[in-house]
Amino acid sequence: MLGPIAVNDVDLMIVPAAAVDRTGMRMGWGRGYFDKTIGSMEKCPPVYAVIYDSEVLDELPREVHDQPVNGVVTPSQTLTLSPRRR
Image: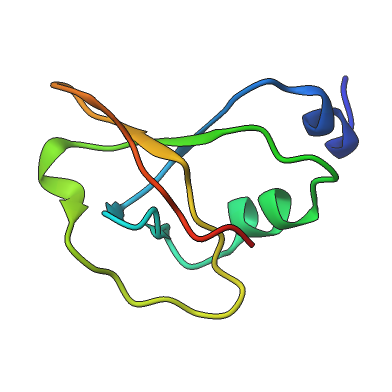
Protein backbone atom coordinates (compact mmCIF):
# COMPACT_ATOMS: atom_id res chain seq x y z
CA MET A 1 0.00 0.00 0.00
CA LEU A 2 1.29 3.45 -0.93
CA GLY A 3 1.35 6.24 1.64
CA PRO A 4 0.13 9.83 1.14
CA ILE A 5 3.58 10.96 -0.04
CA ALA A 6 3.12 8.79 -3.17
CA VAL A 7 0.97 11.51 -4.77
CA ASN A 8 4.14 13.57 -5.22
CA ASP A 9 5.14 11.18 -8.02
CA VAL A 10 2.00 11.41 -10.18
CA ASP A 11 1.90 13.17 -13.56
CA LEU A 12 -1.80 14.11 -13.45
CA MET A 13 -4.42 14.21 -10.71
CA ILE A 14 -8.10 13.56 -11.45
CA VAL A 15 -10.35 14.73 -8.60
CA PRO A 16 -14.10 14.81 -8.02
CA ALA A 17 -15.99 18.08 -7.60
CA ALA A 18 -19.47 19.43 -7.05
CA ALA A 19 -18.71 22.36 -9.38
CA VAL A 20 -15.83 24.33 -10.90
CA ASP A 21 -15.84 27.95 -12.04
CA ARG A 22 -14.12 29.38 -15.10
CA THR A 23 -11.09 30.52 -13.05
CA GLY A 24 -10.46 26.96 -11.85
CA MET A 25 -11.98 27.33 -8.39
CA ARG A 26 -13.27 23.91 -7.32
CA MET A 27 -16.14 23.32 -4.94
CA GLY A 28 -16.08 20.01 -3.14
CA TRP A 29 -18.20 18.67 -0.32
CA GLY A 30 -16.74 20.63 2.58
CA ARG A 31 -14.13 18.33 4.09
CA GLY A 32 -11.05 19.79 2.38
CA TYR A 33 -9.28 16.48 1.64
CA PHE A 34 -8.28 17.39 -1.91
CA ASP A 35 -7.41 21.01 -0.99
CA LYS A 36 -5.07 19.73 1.74
CA THR A 37 -3.46 17.16 -0.55
CA ILE A 38 -2.97 19.57 -3.46
CA GLY A 39 -1.73 22.34 -1.17
CA SER A 40 0.85 20.08 0.50
CA MET A 41 2.47 18.69 -2.64
CA GLU A 42 6.08 19.62 -3.32
CA LYS A 43 5.54 19.85 -7.07
CA CYS A 44 1.87 19.76 -7.99
CA PRO A 45 1.03 18.12 -11.33
CA PRO A 46 -1.90 19.34 -13.42
CA VAL A 47 -5.17 18.75 -11.57
CA TYR A 48 -8.41 18.11 -13.47
CA ALA A 49 -11.88 17.76 -11.94
CA VAL A 50 -14.53 15.40 -13.33
CA ILE A 51 -17.95 17.07 -13.44
CA TYR A 52 -21.10 17.35 -15.56
CA ASP A 53 -21.40 20.15 -18.15
CA SER A 54 -23.97 21.97 -16.00
CA GLU A 55 -21.48 22.12 -13.11
CA VAL A 56 -19.11 24.49 -14.94
CA LEU A 57 -20.13 27.85 -13.46
CA ASP A 58 -19.11 31.46 -14.03
CA GLU A 59 -18.08 32.06 -10.42
CA LEU A 60 -17.87 30.23 -7.09
CA PRO A 61 -17.17 31.49 -3.58
CA ARG A 62 -13.62 30.90 -2.40
CA GLU A 63 -11.86 30.62 0.92
CA VAL A 64 -8.18 31.05 1.70
CA HIS A 65 -7.50 27.27 1.87
CA ASP A 66 -9.22 26.45 -1.45
CA GLN A 67 -6.96 25.09 -4.19
CA PRO A 68 -7.79 25.65 -7.88
CA VAL A 69 -7.75 23.02 -10.61
CA ASN A 70 -6.13 23.33 -14.04
CA GLY A 71 -9.10 22.01 -15.94
CA VAL A 72 -12.28 19.98 -16.05
CA VAL A 73 -13.45 16.87 -17.84
CA THR A 74 -17.17 16.72 -18.62
CA PRO A 75 -19.19 14.24 -20.70
CA SER A 76 -18.89 16.55 -23.73
CA GLN A 77 -15.55 18.32 -23.37
CA THR A 78 -12.22 18.80 -21.67
CA LEU A 79 -11.54 22.40 -20.67
CA THR A 80 -8.13 23.74 -19.73
CA LEU A 81 -8.51 26.65 -17.32
CA SER A 82 -6.07 29.31 -16.14
CA PRO A 83 -6.32 29.14 -12.37
CA ARG A 84 -4.57 31.52 -10.04
CA ARG A 85 -1.89 29.26 -8.60
CA ARG A 86 -1.42 28.83 -4.90
